[in-house]
Length: 390
Ligand code: FAD
Ligand code: DHB
Image (cartoon, rainbow, N blue to C red):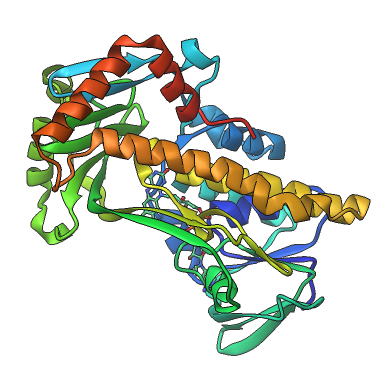
């Protein structure tokens, strides 16, 4: 088979890129390792910046978002028993939208057939060939048979564990930067009303906790746990007890318990692979970078990468200009590093680090106290949280 752009991975970055290219008449195929039902049931992020919602509106794949997205005009930071609000809309004129990554993915997949976006599910043993030449290709197995897609360009949208970044690393000379954190997030999704109408990020003596939601009847909570912790060690009641103990007195009253629809533990990491392009292979989203989830930036960075990359590919086909393709890596990295900084800052501010002593705790308290009393600090946090401009 021959296409213009072969896209590896049907996460948010691959699906958004596919739709943006199709909307400009560019032929592309998405190749995904997993089944459709697996991809559609993965529970991940929940907070969308306007960068992301604008893309969904531009594509007209926004019926679910318009009907069910919750506009958030603020969120709370909690320090022990104290809770204060960051008024993001008053401070920036913008808002964020609570609408799950799971729903975004389902909406993009559902709209694919009518827009001529082909998705190959359950593609095994994918390999990438000839990225330095004029005719790169991907091979994979499907229903036991080997298939090859030749393309003008390959978009590596295959997440942190996919083959695209490895293909660039194998060619040598790549630059990567990493920081691992000594804890993970244990998350629970349940059909119970949220404890508060806005998100709460809480730092307390027992560690970090986040109260989030998917709808007025569905809650999403997370707590910081040591990396050694196993899911089997967390029966649901233990997690609900721990959540109640980590929030301020008013919010903890609002925590309603209910059966878990999903529970999982995710490690926290900051990671940037700066070589986002080699020859005709371009990386986007988690394939090139990971942020700790504290700033809710992972999915939104995938969307901004894809906004830059789709513009660049469209300019190549429409105007015959490769200037934007050549500028892609620098443009994307400028935004990525700022989101990395904010995610790292909020992670350090809001978590208990095992090696920290009383001095570091006092520093966290002093900083939170400063944020609570300083409109300037609140504005800095708000403008990063709603997302920096493209
Ligand atoms: P992905 O969503 O990872 O998609 C990559 C796709 O490529 C997958 O479908 C994968 O199956 C496919 N793929 C991989 N290898 C191959 C192959 N060999 N062949 C074909 N296809 C392949 N962000 C937040 O902001 N808040 C959160 O709470 C949050 N929680 C998260 C929890 C977990 C467990 C993880 C992993 C991530 C979380 N994130 C969160 C980050 C956010 O979900 C990601 O930033 C976002 O999914 C990035 O989208 P992507 O399309 O780049 O990558
Ligand atoms: C959610 C996840 C985040 O990482 C975050 O910062 C806010 C909300 C969520 O899954 O709802």
